[in-house]
Image (tube, rainbow, N blue to C red; front, side, top):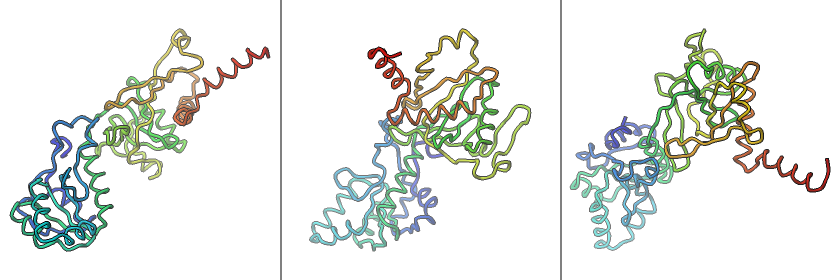
Amino acid sequence: MAGLTNQLSIDDLYNIHRDKLKLEWVAGQEGAKHALIQDEEQTSAEHSSSVSWVGHLNLIHPHQVQIIGKTEIKYLEGLRDISMQDSIAQLFNSRPVCIIVADGCNAPTLLKRKSNEYNTPLLATPKDGNKLANVLHYFLTNLFADMLTLHGVYMEVMAIGVLITGPSGIGKSELALELISRGHRLIADDAPLFSKIAPDIVNGTCPKALQDFLEVRGLGIINVRELFGDSAIKKNKYLKLIVQLQQMDANDLLSVDRLEGSYDTQSILDMEVPQITLPVAPGRNLAVMLECAARNHILRDSGYNASKIFAKRQRKLMESGEE
């Protein structure tokens, strides 16, 4: 994948999106091997989303892929000949990796000539320039994002991404199977892949080789899609909560905060993700507890904290002298 080498050739970009975006080569075919490159100074996940890969024509802060639509064509055609030549010269002096003419516009003759002269790929599409920029930006952000593989089962529970972790044999897959039977959806078992696509968004997906499969002790490998249907599988989800399963004895349970529970955070790709530790013990319905943990996280995320409300109510009662 290009995400490992931090570059993608325009030829590859064209082949990937040719049909979807109806791309056509106009000029500059000699530059097909030019590559979109992630800035080496911004390879960390914290900064990768700020790299200027694609955008509408900008001569001051040039993008690697410059999009020219109706507005830009109208602007260029409204200039005097000498000014238009200067603007296009400035465009090519900034060394764009590729130029795409959008909105079904015809590329100016001078633009085509300069593309061939500089060996700069010039493509055209009938697609709307704004939609084109959004599609390419989303694609490149995901492609160049820093990635991390974690051990656990990644699921969509109560419409949020929940990573179930814990030592081998503690029952992660069995819990996942019960959650699937309760209507929740599997994303990835064993080795979910996470990528940071924005400063505050970590996206979780499943490696291709593991898609649809879940390993359950005693049952072996099962195909969740075949057993439960397409609705039991989710392609990806933003990571919102980590639930760690942990064996606890009586003394360990006594150390858990009775009001707050075992809330903590874990750093995933430089983003702090809320983490809850659920004690594993006989008689505890982990599926119900995990569902409740997901619901409670959604409430806490919206600003409601039950333990704080409870403590505040007790304090008011004590101050008022009521039993």
